[in-house]
Image (cartoon, rainbow over all chains, first blue to last red; front, side):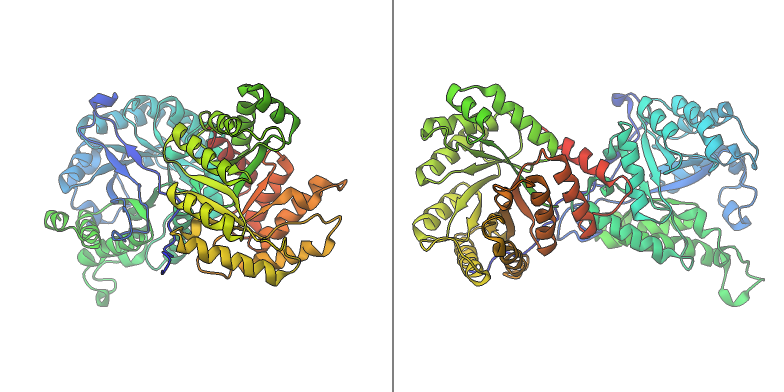
Length: 325
Length: 274
């Protein structure tokens, strides 16, 4: 008799649901659930694979330094987070990521009350779940988070980020207002685990966390992030609960920051039309993260969104989704 | 998936448990279930020791443990009839749930009927590498008997994951050369197949009658883990032991390092409590 030598994974990636419908105390028309994978991405013959979700990025202020090409699809809506979010939903975004960029002391220093108002406007304007991302200034974010978390109470948002050096305020706030949490680590699997342990030590469930191991654009250290994501995912599948979280990739901000996306047609003609090149750079970056375990991808350009949707459908081998995309 | 820790404390040889068996006092048993669960046991060994030879008492003890936890039980006995009574009592209490038979030897008179029981109850089994000729004194004999048990268990339809081989730890105080023989046997047992069977020891035997029991147990445990040991029957309530195991898992690359790895280990342990 030939023994069965197939070695099963001992674990499964935690399922994290973002958003709450009326039945659960929110106002979303539907929710988004990520994670749940019982094997590596898209190996559906081996076990259940979670379906990645795609969010589009909206700011609380006009994104002054975005390239014209990236501003073009949204036009005047960029001056109004609510209209901007509506436009993203029309493009087919599963979620909206509201980045509170304007709260940064160097970018307008908007108040917690103004940030809360932006959150409420977006929640009123669109039916999809919301990701709320701080300004990146730890001190200011700790002032803003309590207000926005309260403003979005009941909506089961995903809020971030906590880091090894700054986790107490947001963890406490997300516990109090029942939101999900993004834990950030600087391309380091050991710290990814550490931040989750710290959050759990405060009584926050590691099943309610999405990990963000930082992201990099294609050509700019993406392979380092890839191997960190791979290690985290393998550990999670082997049963390490502290690394069993779905993984978030913040792709738009990275892809649109590199010269391959920003350079115009006239600057380097041989690189081809920016109109195609830039969204492609964003989509190609996202596609790499899909195959190493990215569960939630944040994008900026509608063209990239469509391309990544198509990639997911093709990788997942689902004809229904392929037609949709 | 980590190491498989089998909590040794529900054993009639301990005075408090022995008395609890004789007086049918569930509180003592439940207390040891809870304490070992909190400490991170993956199985709870249940053994009557010298407290009773009555099968009804064994059934009572297994029911008492099974009804107070979701952690699977390791049914620890010598007589065949005790195993069948124990397995039946367990299934009657909790239905079909993982369970461990502790243990068979390589003797056909034990091995064959116990593998039949393992197959019937979908149980895992520990195979101790001894036979009618007694315990092996060298590495080769340990491997020979381990190989025999392993092959027979696969034939009986068990998966490698359900098979635990025990190379028999002996007291260092009386048989010092056996400590190294067992380590070498562990290393070679990992090469029996890929994936290999589990390799388990009854740890505390190594420190029997010594004056530095905890230190010897702990040191031997991490040495054996480095050789490939991935299961043990031991005192899971020994905090220093558990920290040494957690650290060995990090050093062997079985767990991803984080500064708070001991905290994570404790959180994980507490999380398995019923």
